[in-house]
Image (cartoon, rainbow, N blue to C red; front, top):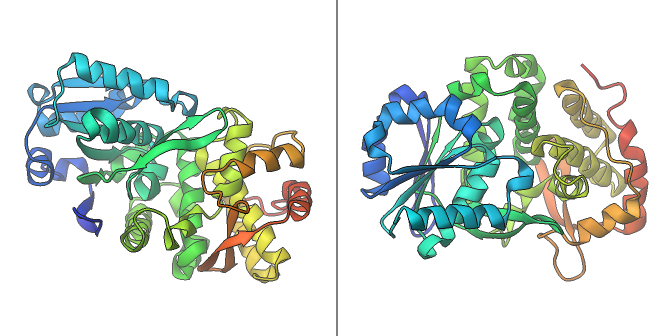
Length: 367
């Protein structure tokens, strides 16, 4: 097992990477979360496939309740959080309770927000079961739910006590979900790890086959990258904004299609391509490096088609993004492979040009 520390205040916490059979789950819970009633938050599908590892580590008698909900992005709402809160209240969950979120990004966001708000905060543990969640969303304390006006507009920063990542849980992950996580991995390489980008160029096929050695190389590298950024800027008031590379357009695409057309990582894939075009337009990135990004994204597989929507309408959605500041949305753009810059103001006219060009960017870059 590998242990990566996330140094947040006041309580740092570990991300443990390794097979669930090596976790000694009961001992880890006691060490990092203490004792108290234990409640699982998951989805029926995820709990059926991954819950056995938790039950084996704890025993059914240790679990005081399993709260299961549909983990589609469209269910990531205040209504779902209310249902979880009411169920916890009926189960008489107290402030000494521990919530264990077992699932992907939706389960982690909803479960985390429920933990942050139920009785003004109970202890939280993440067991991420998707690639996106293992390399990104389970780490750093961002929790939240969507509104019709945009993604993650209601939420809180609330750090877990422990994150447990089992790469073997990715074996049964549907291929589309797995590929969604690969786009997030590419994001980390572009924004801050040129060595990882080169590794992906050489080993992408092995990663797509879910080669255990490749997963064991790539996932901890992304975890460390995020842990370092979060330690410097826990509440996204500065350098943590770099993690939003590709997310400005991604969130708008998810909102515009009512969370039905794109997996999150797929939307990030399009967002990476758009941010690369912005960087070239501002003369911040060479065409050579932009071509490398486009080629690597294209090798992962075909992205879902962009919606038939005017640039003006999409621009309106972008302006409602949670990352907006006075004066508009600040984009994150790459400066090359392994370096990025935040705070870029994008004129609407340039966005319209990029939106028109975007469908043609990956042409010729397929596998």
